Amino acid sequence: MSAADKVVRPEIREMHAYPVADATGLVKLDVMESPYGLPQALADEVGRLVAGLSLNRYPVPTATRLRALIRRVMQVPAGCDVLLGNGSDECIQYVTATVAREGAVVMAPSPSFAVFSMQAFFYRLRFVGVPLREDFTLDAQLFLDAVRTEKPALVWIAFPNNPTGNAFPVADIERIVRATPGLVVIDEAYQPFAGATFMPRLAEFENLVVMRTVSKIGMAGLRLGYVAGRPEWIDAFNKARSPFNVNVVTEAVAIRLLENKAVLDALAAKVLAERERMRPELERLPGLKVYPTAANFFLVRVAGGKGAGTKVFDGLKAQGVLVKDFSGGLPALENCLRLTVGTPDENRILLTALREAL
Image (cartoon, rainbow, N blue to C red):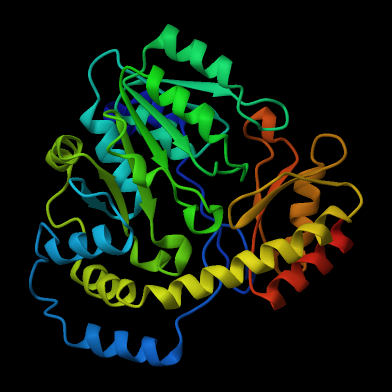
């Protein structure tokens, strides 16, 4: 037995690290990034900005200017504040740590974003995944029954949901927020493509916060997420936050890009237009079930027995296209692939490769 084996938690030894595939040389359509880089003039401006930063100094720990800008451009309601994180993943960590009393329950629909359950596991909380229906719609009554039974300290609802792509009915989410005795976090990572948000309603519900990221609108490399909510929630989360968690490059570049948010919105609109162009093309492919989506990706299921989805995944990769394969994980996602919406050229390559792989 190694030294590590003697001290590492047994359940940690048995788990696998969060998988991120190597996309070198491939058309990268696996992790829902924006496919578009910055316009050259703005990229040059960012380059000059970074060159002038004092990299020998720690960042301002409160990121006051960036937080104020996010409150303004993301229309955070008056009286609410924001907490910044190194991507949404770190925000999930801070929120989970804040409610991590012994015996506390964390709840989310299943399937949903894997980091919700991972962080519950790391903090030794009990995670309850409430199954979605076979078509991945939300069974609101089943969820409400689970809330009444489990009395969760924390409920996560991705809106739209990842990896299924669909947005649950607003009225059902409202019922869940009202019924939950603890905190409800609405994860709006894909809000730029959904056309709906709970952000204006933060003052309406005492136990509601909204989490977002700038990764899907062209800034995935900066790793910046944020949680918006009433001051009492943000103050509590801030106590679990690591000091200097947002670096000086991220802060400076995010400020400059959010000051030019119209550029980012235009790029998101191009992705949205491509999503709608791709939808009928995918639906025409034989042997492929396409699920409804309000995000910048499609979840599809390959017809056939066990391994059919992985066979198509391997066929796409052999043709130079990388998507996400969910086979071998949750049974509900067997033979499912997630296809990120790319540029028009990337999407043409994907569709051609899919026809061949199918």
